[in-house]
Image (cartoon, rainbow, N blue to C red; front, side, top):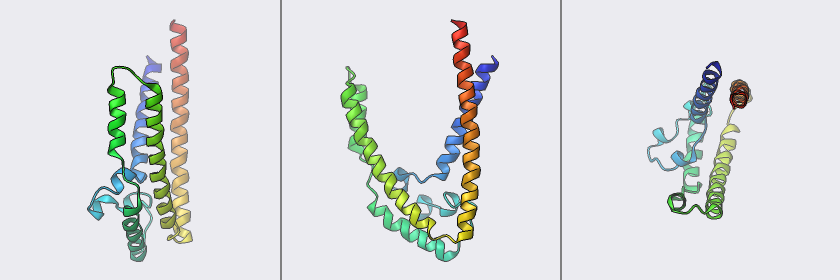
Amino acid sequence: MCKVIAVSLASALVFISCNSHADETFFADNWHQQTNNASRFNIESHMFDGISLTEQQRQQMRDLMQRARYSLPPVNLNEIETMHKLVTENRFDESAVRAQAEKMAQEQVDRQVEMARVQHQMYNLLTSEQKALLQKKHSKRMNVLREIAELQNVSSEEFYSSNRSNQ
């Protein structure tokens, strides 16, 4: 019972961690489709949360986001629909699903590269003090994620070892 609780707790922590990490990440899918600038990207509540930006930095970041909005490859709804059709077919075609998944993954890679380019430009607008603070926050976040990953590994090892002993 304790092992089941530990696995459940670890899963919940990973879920919470992923959700909190998602808040800190720029999601391309939502980033370029919304039209309201304020709702599309609030600089201070994402990558630069907790870092005081000057009005000039804020405006430069808004300008970068506005320009990038038009250069970001859009989400291809046809590819999503194709994958859905493959998944719901009577017969599972692994090679077709694999090819479709690879195509969709490449499109996601292209979006992530473009987002990283914009994030890099935004990062370079920061002062050295702001960069140091951002690095400190990143280190803290990574330590928390390492702890969660370790807890998850220990819990899954216990889960699998208890399943083996029950068989």
